[in-house]
Length: 294
Image 1 (cartoon, rainbow, N blue to C red):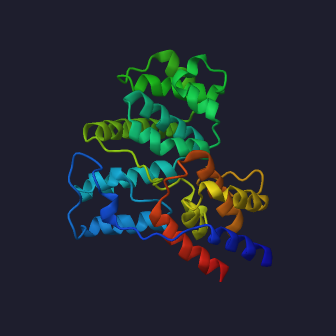
Image 2: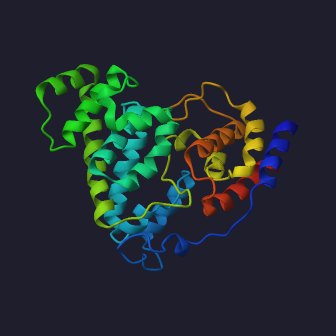
């Protein structure tokens, strides 16, 4: 216990506290004006729940929030895709990423590249998703999924051989789950382009798929890392189990606060612009970590 407290204090000493407001989030993020204040009660409830689940209030929601009921319905489907599928999360994430490539949504690619890494796709695999047919980095299941996604997202006319291979490896339920995922993210990708929703440059990410099984410290740790914290991360990483599968929402691995924090910090180290951190998460993380340390 003493060692854990010391490690937490090391991390705390490296994390500055910065206040953050919703107004700052809304500066020139799309073609639409900022959300009217005070927030619609539907939005306020959504935002509170997102923060509690470890996600930030991203520009997509700050734009679509002008239609609160539509935004709430869209979030419900996104959370179903992220939390409730029988299809393994790495395959769902691969379908999302490929769909975003096809529709040309830089916004969705920016949001989901970190989740691809969370799902243990290598940088080489992520780079070769766009040219997967010539790649040797994907297995039969991934290739069958990518073949289906390519044809569905390019007009929807999936030929018989492609569907036969896809249905050989996936159940009817999984086929519906993947098909809805492609449809939802295709339409969302079009929306991000039409409304010119800008990329987050401060490290904000939507709710990650493992939030249900992560301790509160995961939410706090998502954006604590900076360039100079690498040494502290390496120290804390010694507590991390080597085979923790944090991509799956149903993972049976339950990490302790320090190990969980280390995993999130490692994700940030691999996936984010470390000079642009989520100020809100730093503030909440500072408070939550102090509570654990105390």
